[in-house]
Length: 262
Length: 357
Image (cartoon, rainbow over the protein chains, first blue to last red):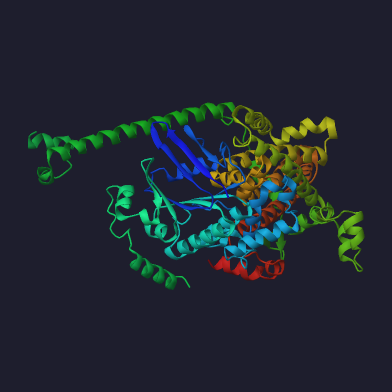
């Protein structure tokens, strides 16, 4: 559990401003969804939080310590999974705990039993225990993303970042992956940040929402504050009709999705 | 533009009625295209002339112009390359018997002394595998050539891997990676046959020098292929490993090498094919194996025996290539790996299938 402070974060790539003076604070253990259209700065924000990208100005503090480089207590899940296709789901999950073992130990998989059991438990959490021995590249997109989540869990992070984890998945798998993310983050009490562009999924799973537009923060609030006007503001001129679903229709959408995914 | 002028511009070949319908813009474009095509034709003719000019200069330098090419002598010696025998006294036929006699006498493909350990009853497996170390020498001279290629590849591989990884810009920052890339370029600049000559003072003229030379050559060539392959990998896995808190060697292994494992194995098999061919060439300068036999029979002007050796080389190279290519296609395909049993007993079936395709 970690408290996260984003303080005046600005990132420029040449003349392009990807993030423009973004600030917010999130207490430990919250499940935060970052909303915005493509190019609004969602990925840059998450990459700055993970330490993969150095901000031009401002800083990200996790438990008061500024993020200047990746740290093991901050795990990241990528849109393109970025798991190793040639390794099994189990080996991929095990590689999450790589920072706790030496080079030869990790290459020859000589980690002790508890570490290996932890990897299998993480696979169980994302419902892939039976597929542990399968090569990652032979798995479906949704399964690969769940292997990515398992790897992140084995890392034993306090903060979980996910950059569009469901963007390339079909609606059924997207719901599955989001459900596993939410369960895992609640069970382990992780502070979780997920960037999404599907408003209905965001509303279904999110607690708190940060809205970005052209690199600026345009919304910061909880589920009850995320009105149709707020969504209009985040998505600008885009026709948002149908993106916003009331509680009633939300339920029907969820039901039909469950039917679609056995 | 008047109608008559338009007719003239295309040389009067087009029917005037069609041109009448064409607008001025179409005609201008038509003329432009004709002009471009004419220029291009002149350019091609010029290039062809230049190539001919270079060819004649080069032929003079290589003594092809007015050199003494002895067609009659060559045709005569072809009779020695391909000895003729007469079946039933009158049907001319290639005398394979002469080839086989030489191959058997010089033990080009099979060494009966070593092979006897395996095939005579009772088989002396321990002696064969652990005292005579016979898995290569059972194949006689071909075995020596094959062993030079295989050992050269195995010895060169780890160093090529090291140089390949260190030569990658992602691992070693920009100016310093050129230490490794430069070393590999230097090794490549010298052909394996010259490396053999360089190693003669060290190990004498024989298979040892040849094997060392092939190992050296492997560092240069395979290392280069490794570097190229590593340039193409995706950033994603590396970043993923960074966020897990992996150290530098772990990032290289899990983030980089794991992406290219299959293609590295495939490239190594490809280099093995090439190395066996190089083993034949370095044999010709006297390093042993089939190459040396070719050279010594040529020296004796015994072209029948030389041709027999060339056939053996052909068999060796084709076998290695078949093996390597089958293995590579299996590695690259995503299908389930076949068991060894299936691989051997399923062979006739697969062969028939691919012949019917």
